[in-house]
Length: 117
Length: 112
Image 1 (tube, chains in turn orange, blue):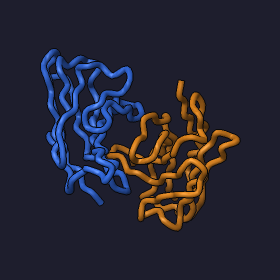
Image 2: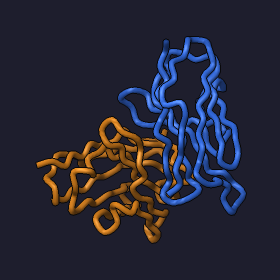
Image 3: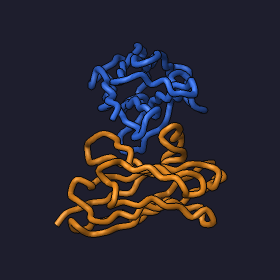
Image 4: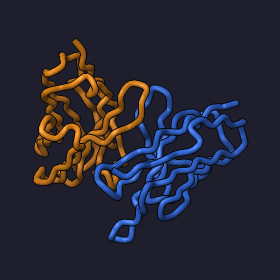
């Protein structure tokens, strides 16, 4: 059974940093693209970043370029999103998903990131 | 970015009746490989999104055949036949043909 478990969310001040993680199991992690998608409270869904199987190819939403970094550790079956220079508008539930934007079949339960002073 | 427009945004349905959600994209979703990367997701209250339909009309494993997708180019439809109480939630269309993948605003399905 495919499982994706996010962690690392929390409250951070504007301008601060946070790293969220996603632990994957039930599939060959190193064989799939992975993604981060976010959902602001009470709002719709927004694709944040994609990473290919070996981490050599990455895509970012324009509004997070230069601030967020997606990475993965295939030995640990884990996906990460390092978020720097956080803004109030980055407040959202962050979901990891298996596959890039052309697949995304399984999603985790999400982790809430709140940016507030 | 490709804009996905759903209608209606709210859809009250009687149990056992059918429901239909429309999704339009601002440009054709046919990719150079011939595939159309149009998806439908269901988000029940308090849950994460669940993919129901991929590539316009293919149902994901475990999805009841009451759910069907259709369309081509820029116009797509999700139909729910014989609506059940368990179908309550928000439904999103999503395009994956272009980066970034973009979602419709969501259609809230509720029982009358």
